[in-house]
Image (cartoon, rainbow, N blue to C red; front, side, top):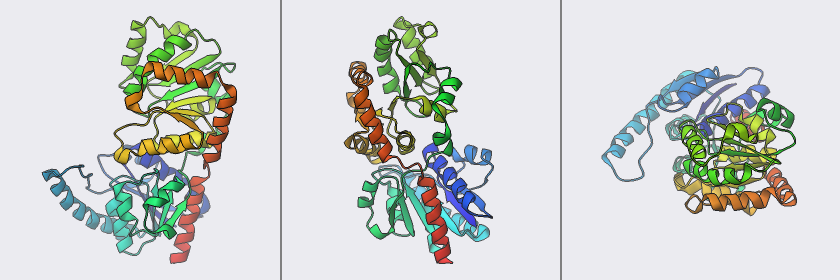
Length: 372
């Protein structure tokens, strides 16, 4: 089976594609995989390191206003369709799958025009512009949230699968996480992360949380600040008279390469509301406080977060309403109410779809067999 995947720009588009690829490889005796992306996105670094063949096309995203740059982008888009068709003709894929990012547009459109079976994977409650356009051309649409189906005209194409997560998210044990991260197994763990680049508003609000919890011996905080934010948050704590080295219950890191182990150790999470992060939280059944990134396209993070809140799995604070005092009040309410945390954890677990990648792999194989 020959599989072509396209997705790029951010890890949230790239890692689901890798996960889907591995799920297909498990089910296919002979599988050849090719990723298509751009030279500018993270995929140019990540995909080759994963050991996959990688091809690029010349494409960039449109600005959300009328500019001369958009006119140039329009011409590049036309050329990128031709580039995509050339790659497809040479590789001869049995299936083409897109996991998000503007690079998917020309690749999936070219595949559809050439009669190759196609799938797009929409991760958010509110679909992006690219996937809304592609929906008219592709064969199947795998959605991360059931509510996303309402935004696609062809409901018969839509299948609710959930969002793919890395297998190690589920295989990591709490004990492994505690030991690997040097945490105390007797303390409840609060995991704070604003994504791979960090979130300044969350980091700043956490200073008030630290001031209170530094005296609590039953709770520990594991805070992933993002590399560019790390020195700033440590400096703020020092100015506030907080010595994290002697506190005994505070661990601050610029980046975590073993986030699955951190998730395995977490009793409560303070997160943004990106689709992949939420998929990992719900797969493990972790209750959360969500602070959606306010500048996400279509404000999709807020919609993602509200779905979690409506199901009882999370509490939401909008970024513009975030303050250290408000965050501290909410953290105290939850951590001091074990029964409420248990209910939220159970609700989070019910939403989780840890088998999403396997489901999408089955759809891809079935679609390939049907078309052939």
